[in-house]
Length: 275
Image (tube, rainbow, N blue to C red; front, top):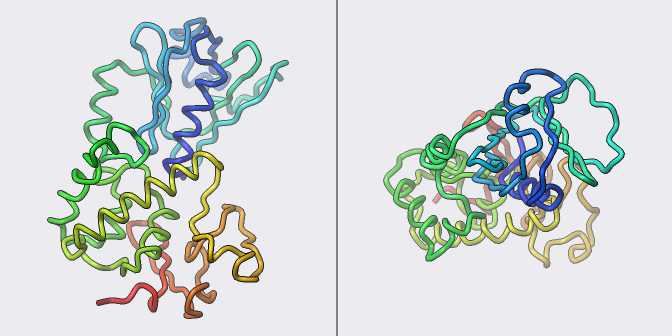
């Protein structure tokens, strides 16, 4: 499932290609035919992301709400537009570009009120300006974390606590701050949380810019450490994610893995001690 930085990137990419101009909308698959007909030829007025939810705004206070889930794909192309396949849930076509959506968990036409209800049930997003202004988002998340006996690793994946963090950012930010993933949220200090929140915002902004996840500090890059670069279909240099049974870049301890919150967790027991 794409992490939050990817959805923010998709929001920006949509507005760059279609923003302020009428778009043609269709549903070759047929499952979104009624919704596509209602936005067809309307201008795209705005785009937003909140966590893993994408919102495409159209004239008339109408929104297309998209959640890619585990299998959804959203890709762009340039004109001339090729014939669509019957797997395309939504196709948007502009003057010079098109976008095809396939296999999402959600693709629905919603109102302003329905959109607000989605925002209300989500936690703060480290990439949303309204959540990073005056540290309001960090404090909101902290208020839930500091009262919880749930592990910090599970809380980081709870989209009601913090929106947009997925399995990669979860594992990596805990490693970067030396925190045992099984520590209860109530045992994480405010200083530790503030540092993690700030770090997540910086890492995810970098993810938006580069369209990939890199979490290693400059002194731990392959060039700096004279080691081979990571070869993985997820891309990016990481400390522990999907490195089970491999040596930690910093201490040489074998990276461990275990299921937690329905996903595989990765951590270094030496760099992230159970204290």
